[in-house]
Image 1 (tube, rainbow, N blue to C red):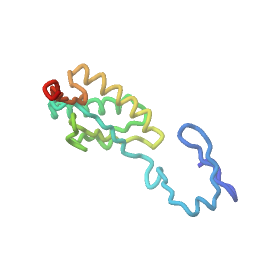
Image 2: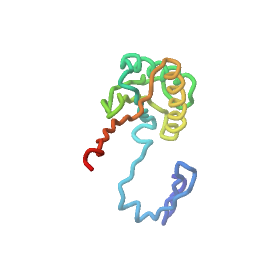
Image 3: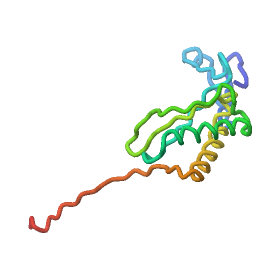
Image 4: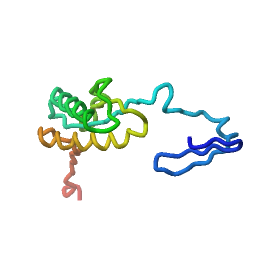
Length: 147
């Protein structure tokens, strides 16, 4: 929120544009304050890997990268410690993990997510952890005998 006047509230949005909202609209709306009760927030990083991947190795690599990144990436917090969960779980062609990290505030989420994604990609390539590609099996009937 940049400014609150008698008639309007000026809100600076994430891509740095200004939204001017009439106060009567705000008084009739549900508002979310991402700085209360605390500024820090949980960042969920979805990571999908091949079913051939060892889940223990995937978890270990994700945790190592998150811990190392906490010392190097501005806005990423080392405490509370990052967590990895096999959630949402089993996908159509992948094991789906969630890396959960804490960031200092909502404005840090996108730079931290970009940095973590790049680190994870490089580390997975180094470790030989494969990303899944959806596959389909197509059966074609031989209709030559039906003519």
